[in-house]
Length: 242
Ligand code: PGA
Image 1 (cartoon, rainbow, N blue to C red):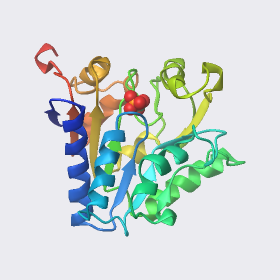
Image 2: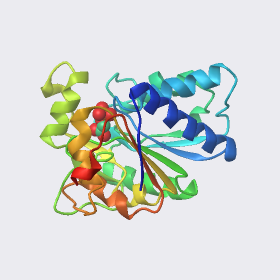
Image 3: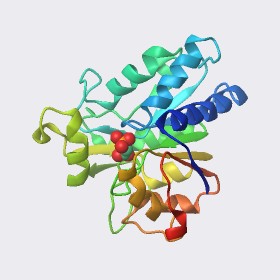
Image 4: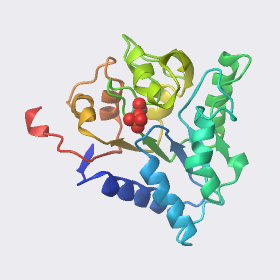
């Protein structure tokens, strides 16, 4: 694992965007694994700016998102499809048919999960996967558990996750109780991974994720088994304490 500690969120965002832009320049039809949440918004802003300034094109890029809330459709402002449209897709020239997010409204979620795994495989796998980390160590919506799912699956969200995400909803009751998420296998098969953590409140989770031990109660810790992970944070990780 390569660990980069940036000065602040702007630097983390800019660095993340530059890594993504380099991947797109090197392989114009690359498959980007994208994430939602507060953390990647700055990087998406930088990508949109690069496009606006004519420094980048996303015409042939394919994207697959990590997860989607069960029961929310593309028109719902709380859905991750809506989030991606707002923060990235509508601001760059990616082709909509090349953007993929699990369908939160699928009548048969199990079938939708299988479809999503098959799709990732058909795309040739994820070239660069962007990840945030939950305070509880989750990646995507792979929540702490005694055992983790390999494949895309429906997951019951941890109460701490619902609480953390309730800031985007009218009330905690409005936060969906389940979601569809890429499994640990889908994430670990990505050729390269960028794990982002912004804010001191993520320090403890990130310390556990890089601690030298893998633990399903800290899903991000499995990333230590991946051969090409870059961690970017905007705080002092205090690795010496580990
Ligand atoms: P955040 O979420 O970027 O909003 O902090 C990260 C996550 O829960 O994976």
